[in-house]
Length: 439
Image (tube, rainbow, N blue to C red; front, side):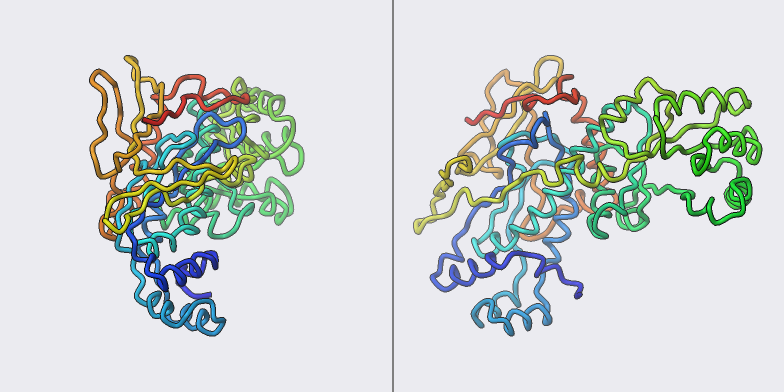
């Protein structure tokens, strides 16, 4: 496998470019938009994630010699198009919602303005990034909201692909998770990492007590000891005896959690380990976390459910051309009218209407006033503009990249959650918490 991501795409993107370059339309300036027609069933809001990763991927989107030779060998496109691909560099402009922003059906999450050939090439990389990362972030945000301030760690790397594991850790962190078990996510994005020992470490030793001694010897009494390899009550007693009452935490990965956690808390307190925390990590999702809200849990570790979007592994976003220049260089709105898949054509801007308490009440999409223009906000409206420029002439805004961009997205998500109506955080099935209107 090469280092280029240029072939992590669908064939029809290249064949469209091939035909469009041949008839001359490939050089028409066009506007593409990524949006979700609807939220996953039952969800009340979504969280944008993946933008920082996507900007880096687009700026590095290149066809190297190996990719070009494979295309030539398999006759995917004409030789003239292979020459065009050899020089491919995205040089257009991109606007969109900030990473960490809430979104709703019809929100123009990403707008790409470039020639048709340049912009259509990016469809798959845009959607594969935003669909997955936003799905994870949207699920993670629900978990954070019901954790009631208790820390949550992402630990789902073994439940997804090796690359998506890093993306999931980043998306969950943006959504409010506190740490990840994935070291590459820590290196790439500056996310705090965590982890101590699995059941295999206990089973390696001649006894649970020997395993605990080894771990405390290595990491000190503030470590977290996994106490459910055999009998939980015995494990807790052994953990406190080995580490003392300064034991940092115990981890529970099985059992009837509300009952077990209450029992473990009582036992720890009776042994004098009143400051020892309890972490649970047993197949958690937002519903089980909510069910533990009254239990003496101090922290959560979530795996499968967060990296799979808690039942919705893709956010349902699509990428459509919504406007193009005609022969007179005027913008022409274009849109699909297919049943159940209609799109709204035109260049767009967006804002969120807030009431006097700064609670979001409406998502407003201004049609005809592009992201580079000034929407005509009505006097007296409390409107927060939603779209920012992410890339100019092929260069990404560094404020949205790397460690700093990830932290900024995390902070923005926390602010945005304060605007949403309280109904947004109910786990029961419901419609989007605010409507989307077009003007």
